[in-house]
Length: 421
Image 1 (tube, helix red, strand yellow):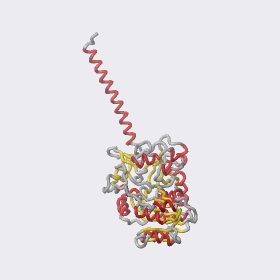
Image 2 (image 1 turned 30 degrees about the vertical axis):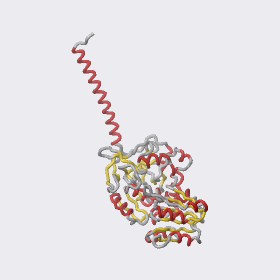
Image 3 (image 1 turned 90 degrees about the vertical axis):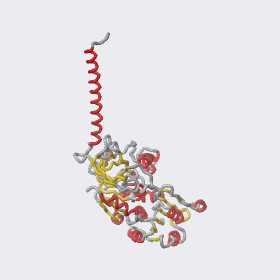
Image 4 (image 1 turned 180 degrees about the vertical axis):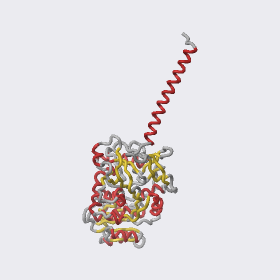
């Protein structure tokens, strides 16, 4: 039966009203999600922060405003106190290591716990309560992959597949969004060159009150890398002779770790006398200026013609790779820790490698859950001297200048950016 005009009009009005109502509910829900994402803040604190953004090679870092990053389950929000200035970041800034952009670099940090992600397990909250002082490792293990389960967290599949390959955490999402337009910004490790950062709990260790925030920032990369190289890759034993080729921030940490582990001889190799003089204060028993003499021959002279038990290459250059391999004794270990630009290749004497059992080993870092607490203890005991390792402190706004000086070889040890008071 045909409807009357009035019935037809009323039906049409009901359909329009229903559609508008559904749309209003939908818009309200979307608006609520957006507001929740944009309006997150901690204990009445700010809902936004500043971070140093890398846009493209050759372009300076810029300080931008971000929405407050929100941690998820198993993650902590850290108020960043200090962040080290590392060559790995510099490789990204120069375009030598491909990485997602725009991004926030900075991967060795100290800070204060200010929040935990929703559904974070109680044992993590108890271990890192709000207000805890913490240090973060640049390798942030997932704890669940094939390698993490085997105890080889420095090979964590999720870290390399998500963070290093995509600039995200392990759900495939970044925690960084620009305040103005909400666009995502990627994270090099935790994206530590920012006033706040999100760090998985597996990458954190408690920092005792006796250790200062600024100097302790280097524990998460420079010292972390050195510890992994000598403890796991080299399996160094007391009495071993050790040569370190390239004694900047990471190399100078290798000197101290070698000394702490009981090395009989610690040989520092560099091309800058200033760095070699500093190496003496950090445990080097001998120094070699490779710009003035043959480094390999000098190392062999010091070791009665044999070469060292362990040699560490901390520059990531083809020449120093070769020097490192030639500096070890028969049966010795050459450990490569310096990152290189893409497609840089190292050469090796295959016959000597085979006949004389020379071991060439790569090492990226240590294992956060088992090693970072031990590294903190080394610093707390005084076996590792943090004060002598830091050669420059700078303000957040001066980060660009620090990376420029690092690129020009003007930083003797390690520079650290002081971010939040």
